Image 1 (cartoon, rainbow, N blue to C red):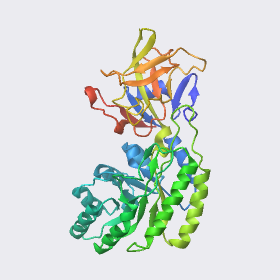
Image 2 (cartoon, rainbow, N blue to C red):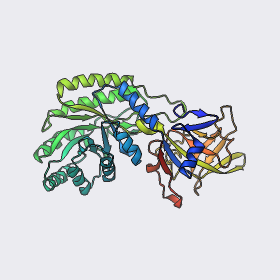
Image 3 (cartoon, rainbow, N blue to C red):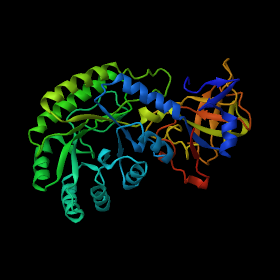
Image 4 (cartoon, rainbow, N blue to C red):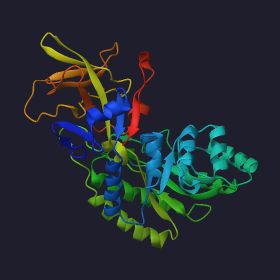
Length: 401
């Protein structure tokens, strides 16, 4: 991967040779996130998109505290999905005015914490209106709310569809006018709308089309809003390439669409700002998962490299986090970056299950016990999205370099 240079046959992370970084950390397995790669992605986005569009980081993509603190200095807001993430966002120094809270199953306690903190709550049901009204009375301030919409369309080419059809997320678009009336009657501080149609999309035209449809939906519903719209969160969905044949996301169509929508918004929704909610796109390519080869063995013609890390740390790389047909993430022997064709090997973890598979039939046959296996594209939905307690092995460490 070009974001991690190879020097003298060894991968570097944040300018540090991988073996030295492993020695500094003290043990494997670990995740390493390169702050320079994250900063470069932020700079790329700022240059490519209209300057008035606000960029938010979705903490669920990677809630490592040091990483969230670093991003809090670079983005315009943080989006959280639990009370735990809310505490993390506040601890990172993000102003409560720039934090939003989404999720279909918020507890009464979480909603009260959100009101007391002064963050924006993305409403997802009528139940939440009643609970927020009660919390507003107890806290002595009106809950700030946006209405999360389940649109009447789907984001094409999306790896995971979050809107369209029957979904647990948000309020069906046809139910929105009645919900908006209830928000006004309950005395909540309405601020805008949240429309998130899907995630992990590599088709810039599809994302742009979804943004246009989402904005049109907001315009139709704005007439029913109890107060003027101040915020329009168009979600994200920006994907990164994981597998052979996948092309990088072209930001051109998205840039052009957002520019046009910003002009339209200035006329139709004066005072409102557009928001993009991005997670994987900001951090996914900045992270590596690193584990150490413990054993090298052959079984009926297949070479196995047995490592000290596996699906309990990196469920997505094992293929057990949403893949229908398992595909290999990009994998290398990080301390032996050999360019010529190599014998093939399969990398497995230490768990007593055939699902514990990090790489199948890849040119990794030069790996030896003690070498470091690297899984690229591991900065999002890694450690926190994996069953780290499974079979009692130690959790993976995480570092930001």
